[in-house]
Length: 303
Image 1 (spheres, rainbow, N blue to C red):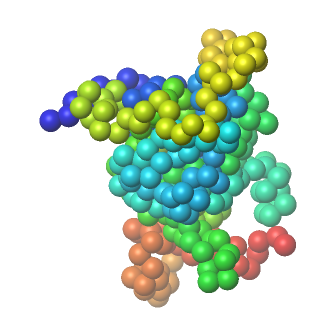
Image 2: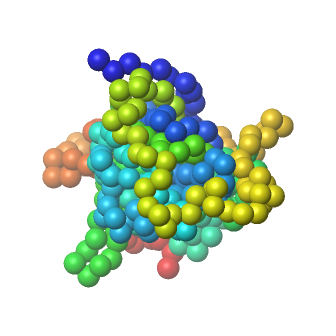
């Protein structure tokens, strides 16, 4: 029986993110606390931030939707496995869509202020001295996407449910940065933002050795020791700023309940929609919210 030790736990609320070291042989676990929340993920070499997660290389090696057994690769010229996905109870991850941004919401929807992955990621990484220029294309945990025959990407209803999780096993010392995706007007998180639970686990030797890769696999990889300028190398190490105080761009996220009176006939219509489209929600309120946003995106979204 494998024994694990929980080393760290953090509750991620909507509008926030968290940067946390995950060392070689440790596991990052991101768990659903509600039904269907996408998490945007960035990862850095803890000792050299120029090496970070690379969606492109991961996509080429493991396909458009990495899941259990696949690896998240780092950027060239280091270009090596950063993490292995050792558990994934949902199986709908994405390495195709870029992070959402404030400019995206302003240009696409007309929103001047809105939760977005880029700004949240910037703020979370600031704790370790990283800036907006250091945010990279994300690994989108539990984001359910697909491709049309014409090659167009689109987002499908979120399939994750309360208690689902994904686990990433670290092959070298990393800084993992997770944020609650800020999109509440698309299927990315089923039109509603929910909290997530972030944990770091230590494994017993047997389970750790099952996944651990050698420190170096290919002769052409460039590792930190290969960089001759020691001064530059030192300045690239990431360390937590003990004076850091979070300043989230949109927080706390405000929720407002809206009462809607429905006739018996309208409730029948919603029930029929739910039967035909179970991903629209588990009750009449969730189905109505999904119906509204689908209609809005098709008929009222700014051009």
